[in-house]
Length: 167
Image 1 (cartoon, helix red, strand yellow):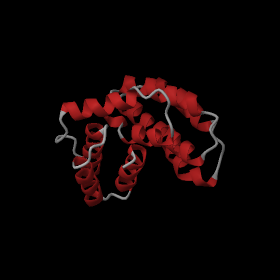
Image 2 (tube, one colour):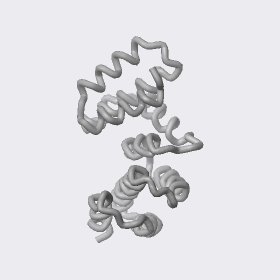
Image 3 (tube, helix red, strand yellow):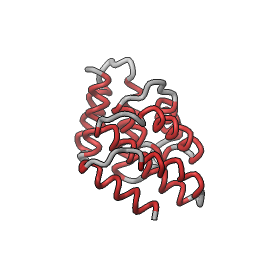
Image 4 (cartoon, helix red, strand yellow):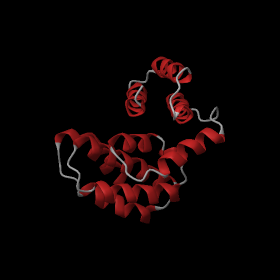
């Protein structure tokens, strides 16, 4: 079983809100001999918690494993962007600010619509975190970064969400 493909299956199951499928993937991984088995199981456990909107069942070790894995990625790709976007709530605001700025600077010239959607989703999440923490000055970089992404009909929802948060 390819680890990269398995990660994408996890993401697809999450976006389909398929807890049943995630549990099946978890069972398959549990009985496998993947070299990154523990990491994959941590992500699936995290996805299930996100679907339940209940992080109380996640132990600190699982959260730390997910955070460390994402924080230490040296070469982000589209799949890793989606992983980070999904698990941003595990990080404190300052870590999110630092990592998000790094990602936006890295992907600012990427014309792939899927990457642009992920970046705009990250920006939306970060704006919500900043607003919640009354750290409005931190939003300027992210609003400007969102405005630099070319207008495309596929991005209308994401741009609308950012316009709402900006207002």
